[in-house]
Length: 254
Ligand code: BTN
Image (cartoon, rainbow, N blue to C red):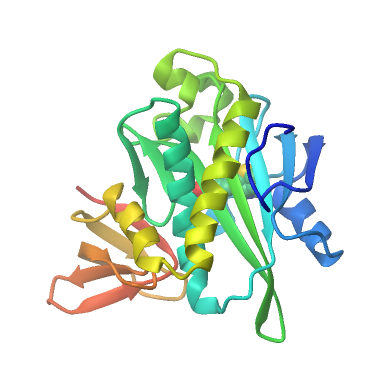
């Protein structure tokens, strides 16, 4: 981390050999006031969390980290932080020379249509104001297909599987933290359209037919026309009405 070229992201970095989940560790650190941009990294995780309560495989060979942000922002900007993180991962992969990087809403990063990275953003709120945001990033770097559980076969991949090469995890972490800081700064400066356009440019989801699944809501199908200025997905239903999707799952049907 000596040569990390950032001004606030990663000024404090904590590296572990093994934790249950870097997001959980980050939450604990956040309660105890750490500096904005503190990063928690672990070589492996034994109980990592994915979106929608799913577990996340995290053996040796991946990048598993969480960033603590103490931003002065309101809830409406949270979805955009999540999108911005996806862009930072995508740009990291592009800097490694990988082509065909796309982002599936909200922030699964895909290479040739297969998932290599997932992001889990969690907010710590007190009395309805956000105190900290935990941005958890998982990137499958030097994993082999046999490292993934059976139900993930064919759905998930790694940089090694795709390129046939091994990568230096520390280089990737450094590049990612730099890209993450760049996009955070755009965000802090209120350059929201710039952030959204970087996401739109890499979108896998816009223009597809999807099935939207939200907890406690009826599932419906629709055509994705784009994302709006808050980062919500705009879905046109069969009857022509438009729905805004800010959370939930979106399954691609075509
Ligand atoms: C997804 O379901 O796509 C999100 C996966 C997020 C995994 C990362 S790995 C680092 C951080 N710690 C966790 O427990 N989860 C996130």
